[in-house]
Image 1 (tube, rainbow, N blue to C red):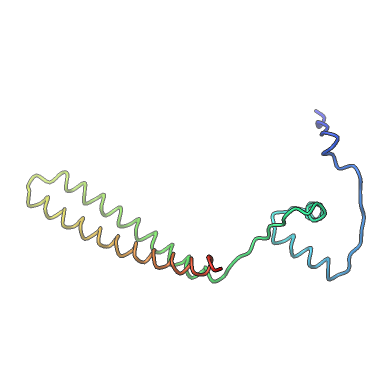
Image 2: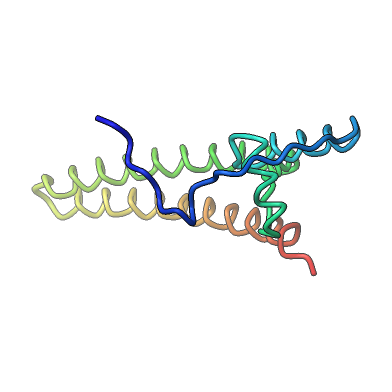
Length: 134
């Protein structure tokens, strides 16, 4: 089945050839590698049309925060599993004293959650200082 023809005003029919020096080519290649563009032609077309060029930047300073955040995420997940298990035991306990024991255990787990949330808030505060500078 043949390909549909595009609208006459959107079809790229005219070819423009140009040359640039090595320095400019390296700069364009660097922008191309850091952006969402798949070809140099796409990039140059947007530059010619004065469209904004978005360059993706990787900040290595966030790596340390990411490791801590992943660790906290794992800890919170395991605390959640513990709370679910304690709740199951609480619901199956026949006596009030056993229920009180399980309720105390859940309280301890929620204290751990509070500590991890405090850690998260301090990390978010540090990240906000870096990213929300004026």
